Image (tube, rainbow, N blue to C red; front, side):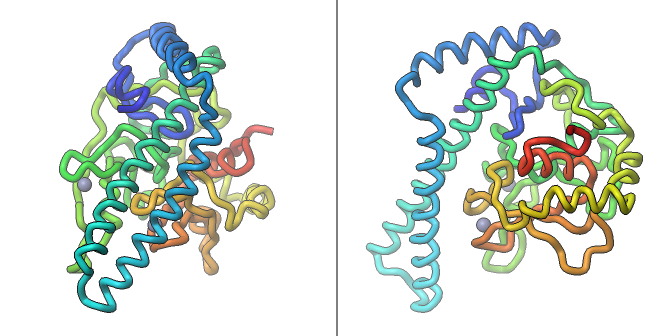
Length: 303
Ligand SMILES: [Zn+2]
Ligand SMILES: [Zn+2]
């Protein structure tokens, strides 16, 4: 059980937004986090959390290599030996365990930031007509929100042809949707609507630009001079990886890519797993803001 799920039964994004906060006042949230963080910090005082997380990601690569080898063997031979099957089962368990440990380390990082920079955080109600704080998290890792049907992580999604989504366009989609079964159909199509409670967030206050209507934000980034400015900022980041977007199958970091025949900047970027076809399209200005923050450390309107 992660830091935030045990504290508030809430989900938390890798970029430090708690979704579904059941408390009314920010100070109560901060007190609860600070208290829990103090205990955790004492407990882990001799542990290099960052180093540990790095090692977990490396172990994950090794586990995935072995799983892929066994899958290949299975495809070529049409079956696995009993020993190989046992090994594959053990590897799948290990992968799930590593994923949990990585998520726990990430939750701890988020808690650290919230405890140490509490004045930067506040409770924020999502505007149903302009849910920028939620679209910003589109396709990103959200910890503590699991599919009620298959227990896989869920992500915030909306239809690609909707450029300015309102709250009713958004939904939680199971990441199993992007995994094909033997019949080539998605293995889980579970979706869930946003609840009233999930529109209550605890996150950074006053992210520049996020108060503007999504339509205006999109217009701004589509202006040729803004587009080329953003492209310049992200030039070095193409093919780089970030842990804010992880493959739902392999849990490895996805890398930033560009489409060769993009219509405009809201059709240009996507994140992709190096192992499989899993991808996240960056189709809103708010997501571009998040991508800029992930790779450059500052968003669209921060200097
Ligand atoms: Zn599912
Ligand atoms: Zn993958």
